[in-house]
Image (cartoon, rainbow, N blue to C red; front, side, top):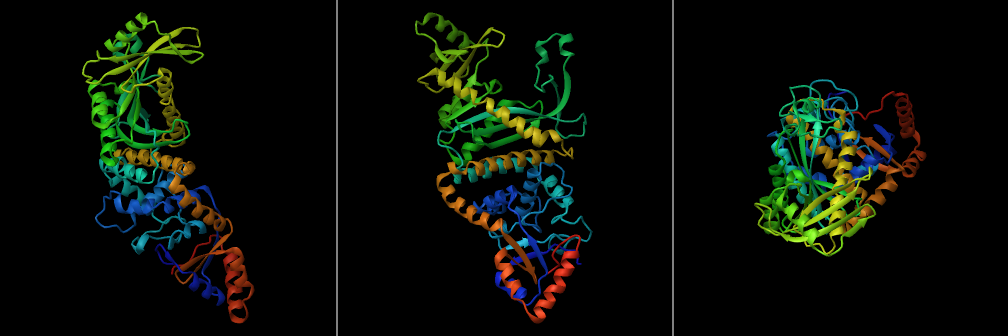
Length: 499
């Protein structure tokens, strides 16, 4: 067997002619798994063509198509792995093959006959080739591609909902105590891995918190108000001590530059992004209304608290444990050039105590209770983080290289987002009407299909169709087929021969 990868072209007439002559190289059954459906969906919306046209590459020459490398990275994430060792194969299902005109054989050797060293069977690209590709991909260039080109792709596919609700939030990615992690920094964290500002504590209190090596991940999340749709449309990975506000502003600036104004209508953020000039900029330049908590010592909070005592209007109920009051057009936030509406919130805690806190927004809510309900949407990003970290990020990184860490994080969030689009495709009206028909057709083929290879070509045949041709073999073609099928059945590892 040659040391090369086999790229089989689609040609059903030639494969059927070879079958009628009893000259088949390889037969493979198919199954319609979730990765098959997901990859077929990506093919149907032109995602891999988009990758080939836009993805940043560290190589001058593209010996391996970029979409194959990205597809393999997706496979790693679908298999919940961060290690490049033992890459899973792609494009095996007959259903997926109906959307392409070639297939990749699972053969030892390098892509385009360039590799001189043996590899594990089942690898279509050497795992170290993939690792080096993403290690050599500059983290800033990959981030820029994800935050601009990918955002444009989502927008063109109508994945951004009309109500335009977004969440700007930060999360820490903790690491083993290994100073070789590039750009990682130590932070004091509590038992729940949340940052603790030890400057406000006594020396004895500060000693209780462990300093943990970590990265900071700032994300722009698009969310449905029904809380059933979540896609990440901007990510920046930095050292744990990086400041949130400039990173968050850059995400929003890049998003608007990529797809224009009007997509983000409501931006919910946590207190780390509280900044008067940024609130003013988003409102006046982009038409974005922020919804963000105030600090208890701020003048805007104190003014609203004072007005609440003077006003005769009753507080609005949000639920049985929460009520709120809105003071409009508060102008006492230094650096903020737009009017703020401040919503005071009284929440009854489980221990019976009442907590008073506040939200500020540039949006003119008719009902302040809706502002509180909107802010609660921010809690959903914490659930996303739990899922993503439990499935991928908490498993650890197999390299301390910052480019590779960034690639793992960004592709994890990208795969998660594309799966969200796939699972909620019925919300994408025009796109859904087109792709669901194709997926239904391919699913029926994928559940009952055989892939046959002959002379460097392949065909995905319905099982009944393949059986029909075999049933009518006679003479020498039948003898050749019987001899081949006996040898084929005895093979412990079935792979197609080189074309």
